[in-house]
Length: 395
Ligand code: FEO
Image 1 (cartoon, rainbow, N blue to C red):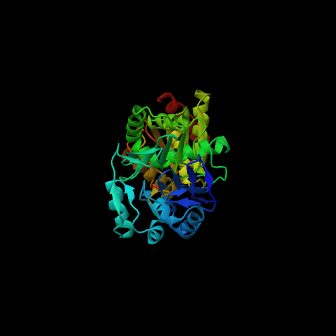
Image 2 (image 1 turned 120 degrees about the vertical axis):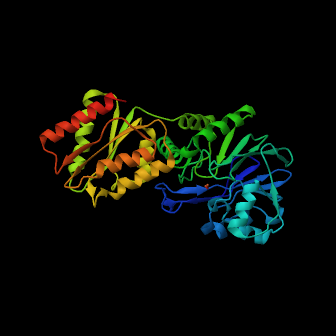
């Protein structure tokens, strides 16, 4: 499969309909993904990025149907992660001397991955490559999201090849933002940002401001995953600026795990308490053991505050809740508020451990946690409602 973005630019990537996890098991990809590679035919011919290793053979075979590989003058490797560089070893067997344009870090990491001394041409922000009627300008995007990441701007067609930025894990044969289901597109875009880019939010803002300062016309953003933004592509940029600025909606999320439903009943009573005080706030409850972890992270990203609950087990907390808290610590959410709760039977370490983990994630705890012995009776349920009320009042 291939299709044209413009007269000069052809998509030659791979749609991966089967993909269900990414980065090992760290990221769920319920709607699949794509590895977008682009062929530019101007006076010179340029290939931007390749595809993930399992599709290397298919990629090279398809590329041969599109062009005589020897006609490729330059390869641009915007990012060395294997989902984009995976087909390079096979491709370079066919055209071993073709220059590969990448950042200095890109060259180092590609050598680290593949142990090949290809013809690397290292580029920096502002370096250009004249390919005929168009010029390609490189923009380093260090730590967005790897040290080697970069983007490429093509004049004339006014396309920003953004690599991972502005992408989503979304398989669709429609491939353009104006053609796909808008709710799916938004959900996959925000999930991608929340889970992958939140740690780098200050850099996102800085990089976008830098690119905007060039005042370049923008007709399309050609990502490396999912759909291409051609209808009002600036909306993708505006979303990133919004999300990078400690994004919050009027939402409180309650994440818990429960052994015999005591902590679940507490969670529901706390939610009732919150709603009795604030009718407008959106309250969502997730059992961490039964819900996709990346979907929970997306909901926490949207929240102004959250509550974590767990029963005590083996003097500790239940593993699913612990896993989410560890993810939060790594992601580094800012300006979120929280509290902890849970049922217990005898030793009751749960709330103290939840609070310790929230503090380790630098989340502000706005009130002392609530523990209930065994299954909550009506007095305990009322205490949970009061806990929810005082929590929302302290935000
Ligand atoms: Fe899509 Fe960072 O690789």
